[in-house]
Image 1 (cartoon, rainbow, N blue to C red):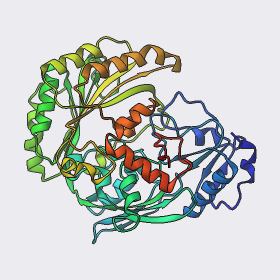
Image 2: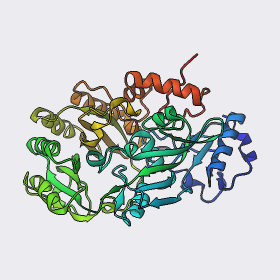
Image 3: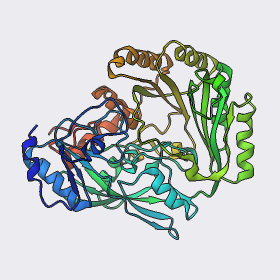
Image 4: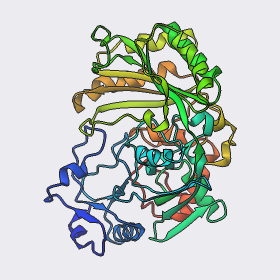
Length: 454
């Protein structure tokens, strides 16, 4: 990797952070720990022109580079050894047109920043379940969050985007302009250029009924929680994190380490109807903690600890159902390891997300019913050899024949798993579009889609 030419990068309006700068160590650190890598430079771009200059420099000099929005990528691509990090962190402009229910947002914004500003107008766009995630990465991969059943994926709210392509050109993409590229960026990740701005559709989301509920995780409670989530009105989206109760201050000491459902509920509709929708969850068992209440949508994103950098691995998958046998398998496997933290995260899908045709975007899992993420966190990187096989075995035990994968939750698993994120004709179509817009595979340090040959 030719890092010796990086000091020649000129004409940047933003900041170029190098290893001898005081803020370098903080700037190179992404959300997930276990990656002690040292890029030759971190370029905090200020505008699309900066993005174009970095891309052109990388293309002409042969310098490798990665693109970072919020730095939450679980595969660790946002923290390379050598080369350039094109960091969008300082691009945070947000223009909300409350009358038209639209917003133009630069891709250095985080989900919580966007959500807080939109909520001032009683509006929202659905992102994921973590406020500090950058809107760039989560949008390009699909976006599965607290509004998925009511309003669909993040990409279902995407109206247009400004993209700097591999040749350094800034293009506006939407349903009429570069429609093939617009199709590809809705689920295809960062393979086709650098998104500098998104135009989103905003939804009326005023007071919600939402928050965290913690229940004891017996097999029957797990099964029933998922059954209730499937039967609930589309206004209710849930996440069931089956895991040992963490030693947090608000968790009773006698529950620490015991298996619980750390459930997140969000009802995007009238309060009275929301209270009726969440009542059956409270009746499953005596709640250990119940923080579900009427509130504003941004309250679904509690403050993050910027010093928290977990080390771990995971496997993403889709399943069709959670019966008593599946629930028992979850309980059994979570009890068969001493990983510092282990979890089976289950998200019931359907609703608005499933009504979009499978081939309408590059996210091809519209008909999948439940998304599962099996994960283990540990203290040292060398422990991956111990806990990685456990995670793989856990996912295999839950497999029900749906071979799909959600690209935003993939770790570094190889091409076969990337292809699982883009099954069937989706993969071939993406490769064809890649060949048109990035024939040399300049954008390759990611969950890579290689250009079609010929």
